[in-house]
Image (cartoon, rainbow, N blue to C red):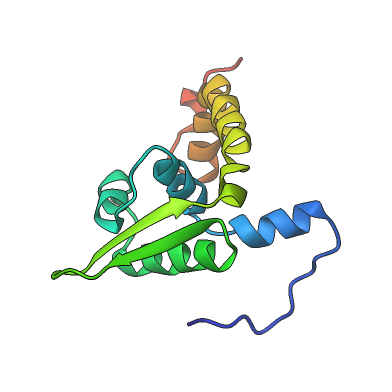
Length: 128
């Protein structure tokens, strides 16, 4: 497992949240587990851009931060399921609010993201 070389700065709530949720896929993973997609293969189908390795690393970090629990069933082939802990469930209203904010501003966000990534010609950007 990867061990960070530097000690994280944990001076305020934002530092703490950033440390726990840092990772490209963690918010989506939490949301999909909340929606009942509890097996790693289900999560992989919901988030096709994530590699199996990265998915496993981020699930492990979420487990270490006590946001999800992992259950391994003693069958062949092994069956693994993840569930939100009570602590993890407290994040769902925040994730939902962030998603709604993204929905409300999706046109602008899409425009600035594409512009920043160099995928959009500035002449094609609608002015709002």
